[in-house]
Image (cartoon, rainbow, N blue to C red; front, top):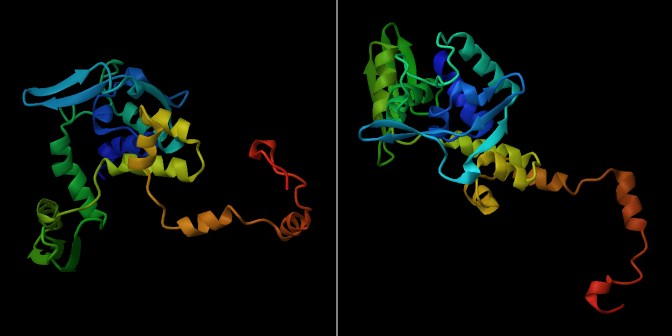
Length: 246
């Protein structure tokens, strides 16, 4: 990811912000000293341009989100490089200070970055001024071609390859990290800006690759604890709510 765009990726991955919330974020809503940001405005793309709306799509979307250290560092670096210190200035802008367009960002920044990271197709330097590219087409068939510069090769794969990680997947990852690490679902729901906890669980969390080990760890006890638990006498009676005694 180009250095000037790393902070917006950190905002999606480290604060779970939607694209419109990232694009509409102003410096007045960021408190770097307290490591917090306030989501109160979104950018909405229309045929006539980009509109800044005062509220996200629901009242639950208006929220305060704590910032991890890597996101604070990325925002501090971006702040020092921003000449316009007006607090109303957008945090993430294009080179002439306008709000970022999602389609332009995807085409010019996001997809080429996936290619360079090896997450979309493949670009291999096969010799002096020779770059071989491989990418999957819409039918899943692997295609290949050769170019004389890496820039041309990356741009070609970014334009032709199908699939790859979406920017919104960073928000999915954020929710999954929180739930997997034991953050209560009501807190995850709050920082995600969801009206219902079911939305958080059903749409924005995914099973980690090591899910089996995590489940078994929940039942793992030291040997002494296991012996103690096994030696405990059975309960003399069932709970009163069961309505009967053994």
